Length: 192
Image (cartoon, rainbow, N blue to C red; front, side, top):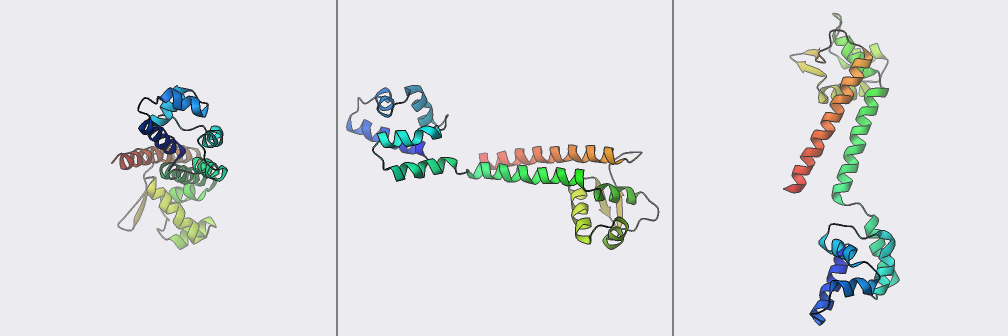
C-alpha cells in the first residue's frame, strides 16, 4: 500500500467519526494545501516524497512506519520496471549496431558471390567469435535487415550501394520503430 492509500483510509476513518469532517480540515491537520491532498486522494498526483515523514508523524504513525512509506515511494512500480527494462534492451540494441561492425560485415558479405551462409565461415572471415556472429545475425533478423530462406541469406536493406553509415542509420531507425511498437503493445497489455 502506498502512502496516498493510507491518507485515504485515514481521511475516511475521520469522516466516519464525524460526517461533517472536511477535506480542508484533514489537509490542515497534516499541514498541507487541500488542493494537493485532493489530487493525491484522487490519484492524479503522487505524494511528495519529502513530505511523507512529516505527514505520517502528524497522523500519529511511528517513525519506522513513515520510513517504510518513504522506501515504498522510491520502489519501482511493475510498469516503470517494464519500461526501464525495455529502455535498457533497446539502448543495448542500438549501441550494438553502432559499435559492432560485424552487423555491417555480414550484410556486406551476403552480397558477395563467394558468400557462404555458415556461421563458422563468417566467424573466420570477420575475426569475431561464433557467438557474436549468432547474436548479430539474430539482431539483423529482428530488425528486418536480413532474411534467411531456403539456405539463402539476403540483405533486405534496399540499398543499391551498401555503406556502413547507411546501414547504421537504417538499423537505428528500425530500433526506434521496434521500441515504439513495443511501448504501444505494453500499453495495450496494461490497459487490458
